[in-house]
Length: 402
Figure 1 (cartoon, rainbow, N blue to C red):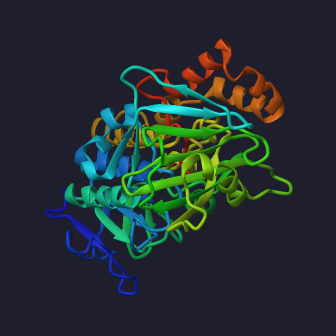
Figure 2 (cartoon, helix red, strand yellow; figure 1 turned 30 degrees about the horizontal axis):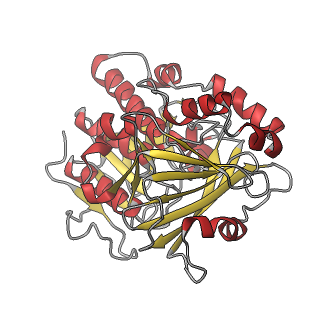
């Protein structure tokens, strides 16, 4: 039976959350709390899974380690058209979004090429507000949301998993990021290949070309990936990411990148970022196995991120919904176990993994500079940013630092 009212649980030690005024604060005694699904992580993948499962009539709980779901984020929050039009994200309040309709691609020498496609767009976001809205949506649909509650352990209890202090569940879904605690505790493999990104947020700034997603290619600051800047509903976000090596990992030089491009983007010399985001971005494709014995990994925890673009929001959302649908079909209709069904429906990114291999080994600033205005490069860039993604694939143009 579904809970009769939205519920958000906040530990007494947690600081007050912006959700407190909009949601009922309550607890579910561990002795009586039985769920069909417990999701660890109120990320995009976790929220998608929990929301779809609740709408399918399942009893759902979400554990989120942060007391405020909008704090200490690790995502750029850029949403592609497909995610805006095909997922629940399209229902978010208008003030959470700003529409961006073209890309300006910069060479290492800072020459630029404008790219666009009729009818295509991206949405930059007020990401903290968007994440808080998502958690409110979960509570509104009867999901028991436990904020300030990190995953510590899960123990087998018959055909269920028991999480101390929360209760028992038929299925446990780890949507807790690239370094998933759920995966580590239960012995599932996690992603091994990463990009590492850092992003600054400048409140109140306006770019000279606010309608563009600005992308900077160059091995000096972004080997294996790129730098970016975009106008958001609240200001400007600027970031850079690079391929993280397993030996001798390097930290992105975001201050050097900012010094290089700030004159193009109108960022004053004395501008101070209001916040900084940083995190790992899986880029090696999905991990296998994705689950076992009533446990499934979702989103970044499963490596479901485009190896080339590092796009994660759209693919993570669809992956979360796929998991919820498989669980509901199994529990209600006796369909195959989700541990078998979900891997078959998970994108493998085979072509993009091959492109990632080539980019890691063959990136050349000189070649890119020479080809910037050539028809082959324009064609490839158009395909990369604007090609019509299929229903069960895709991702954000810049990436999710989940």
